[in-house]
Image (tube, rainbow, N blue to C red; front, side):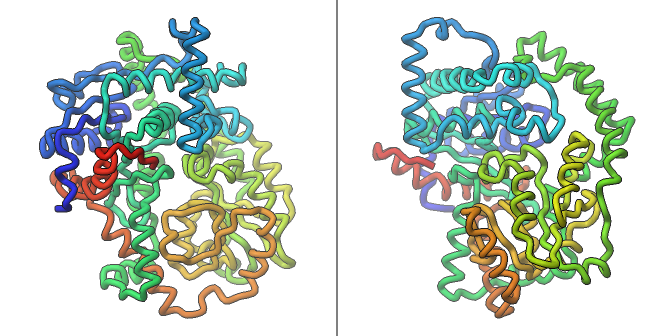
Length: 518
């Protein structure tokens, strides 16, 4: 166990939790309960659920439960201009201290207050809040101010020494994070590893990257450190049989397992549950009308069939004879784009830019994301298909054959970049990534430099020194191995030890009254 355990004793902790029905909510509750038992925590909870009973043992005896505020309801304090001015002053102060304007918060809330950023490219649930912000584009800023007031009230009352959550990418998470930064309160998120299946990590990094793994991988690579046998086995196994990381594969299987009858059964249970929660006082602004959800399902089913004509499936032989740049798309409005790589949130623009930089004889292969299938207006695919030298690839065809034969793979922060590097392909990165510690690939943040970078990469071999290349990959894998823990609900000790190592130093600094900004 690390030497920071004492700094975690008897903390006041605020946990921001998903809805109780979600599997990840159960896990973080178990984590918090185990930490409470080990370190005698006083835990308070912020959650969307109207029913606080599932959290009784966690918040006992002195913790509090805070239900998220109604985002569209005008509160009494908003009728006082002086109070509004004071809240906005503190909000601007939080913006300066965190170096983040609230516009980034609005974009991150792309399924709710930031819906306008992707409304033209994807059909999505039209919650009451979505209808409001699309009708009045001044409303998102008002909602952020309202949430910030709520966040400050919670922090004033709970007085947390530490805040834990799964993410900071929704509007409520983002605003609580900003309010915490203003007060110098450390914030830690627990995230699933995108390199090691069944593993997770704690991070105080704002973008929720495993900064410790990146740093260790980079340090070991530069020092000429040897790679572990476990890392070598990992690389060898992936190349023999490429596969996506387990938690992503599970998401796909879960979504694909919703056949016609199962979807309707889930729909019925959801409608009943939301009706009961409404009676208990839960905010309805983030609830989709029952008939709207039903209509959206049938529209998606029809469009999935209709849009097949836009996509192609290419066999290995054809790909081996084709010169192409490969760009895998993200799920529209995914946090990888709206929170981590915000300059690339408009994927249509990225595709147009890449197509305009294609050298002679090259095609741009665009693979749609599975979760976008049946969710886009037809005109989106029609417009993409008209861009010169662009080929749309079926979302359900294996991505690995396209990665394996690509002359160049382009990605923002997607896991396809890591998979491409593992397969020894040239990889062009448009933002920071979770595998930066490998030091492989070429990152270009300035669009004006893309054309030169792309041509330069294509003119050089993908791998010059195979042994050194694999050592760099192995160092990144070792960094991940050393800074993650196996997700085991029956054994929380490794997760708590890693939490101590991750946040202990920041809590020690906080005790010395020096603000820390994640």
